[in-house]
Image (cartoon, rainbow, N blue to C red):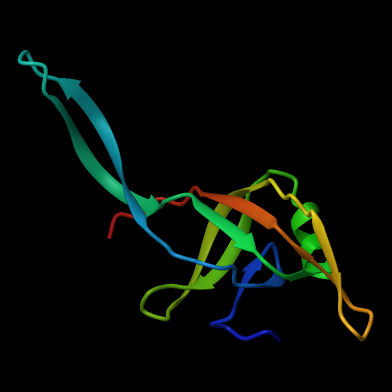
Length: 127
């Protein structure tokens, strides 16, 4: 086990938490209208996590293979939020990896640098 604060779980595979893992929220709007003066108004109906771009400088081979196996359909991601609460969210992963550098440690273990992944959060919250 890597550790709850140093990892995330994507589709059941524990993966090192990427550099700069920072969550932000975005509002979800509905009922958008344009007034006669041209002002756009909408009702806030909830929030969701904003798209998250993950990048790794060093990712082991098995974790890279788990990311490359993602098919673009919804999967679960588990992580710790700002309050150190465990959160499970549904995401659509977009794998856009550029594995330009292969690293091999003295024990023969392979790792890759330059790996990236974007997560599009699909769960909506109204709290």
